[in-house]
Length: 465
Ligand code: DGR
Ligand code: NI
Image (cartoon, rainbow, N blue to C red; front, side, top):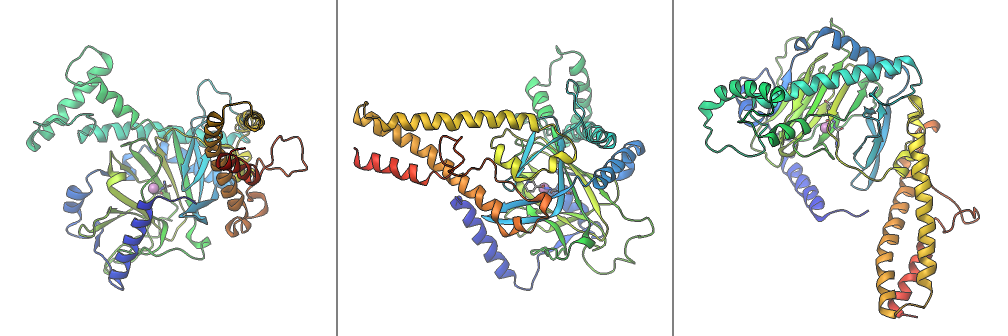
């Protein structure tokens, strides 16, 4: 697989730092530490945290019931992801829910939304409870959108342009006026003061089109990676930046750990560091070993927001507690390509909830088939010797680029479907390498393996006739 040079450099730097650390660990703080709030205010101010009691009880109930329904219907799946050219099955199980037709690609795996109920779409769900679960999540989505808008306004993070002459002293006052001005803008477009660009960008960066749901029961996991830099303990998700999001968009995460109310904080946290029984989100400043890390405990129904560029400047990880835990991570996913093989790679999991994707996938495959036919027509055309030598060579060179890339991707997908990790999955979750055909299935105009065709074309451009 092709990898950028920068990526390899980062790997080396990481390895070197870990070697230097040896048995030592970098410092990190939790709310139990005296300097926690100071550090948060200065180095992690774009992380917003809200306790569960700020969220309407009715919403908690709907959403938590939704999670349990989806688990009961076996809608969560561990993904077969590819990191640095290696295949892994994730410890966390996931399902993507969102606007009809949206997808989200993370760690080289594109997930397809189970559509939430959307006006103008007639979506069939495999059960009324699954419909209700999707509806609960769009309600949560609306709620988190509003909370994110409020948080951004409060921090004055909605401007597209820097306002240079605003001093720190003005901030609080600014906040008050910005809210009132904003309120009038929506009613009266003629108001001055707040540029319309800002208002649009504020909306764009918080209008979540999907949520990626996570589920993990630590007791079902034989092995979890240890957090390597700070010694934060078991990780459900390693350090990362979220990928393929609209730039500077907010990520909102609702967390539901199924802790029984008897299980209070493990008796007196006299020991240093985070409570291993409790789920946490970990944060660190990217490429900075001076600033201590942060571990924020997440109890049943808490949520947090990663505002603005926090996801770029910082990395985060998910630290496992003892109880099973769901999370709903709301995102503004970016524009996209590469659907067919990604879809079939995930077997038939989507049929668990809805048949929504079958029609668009059939349509897409029809187009893809036409592309295969077009490719064969171009091939027979460049095989003819009617054109001027130079022109012909140029055409073939261009075409070679396309075919080589197609062949590379086909090989990569064939390998992913046959990896050891893939073989380890249960039968009904095995990836399907599709489209795929053998030479004797002669309804296809060209072979699946393009090696020979590519070699022939290479000869033509190198040697002419
Ligand atoms: O609190 C949480 O459950 C956080 C979940 C989380 O950080 N998810 N991140 C991703 O799913 C992810 C991973 C890699 C690239 N893009 C997104
Ligand atoms: Ni993440």
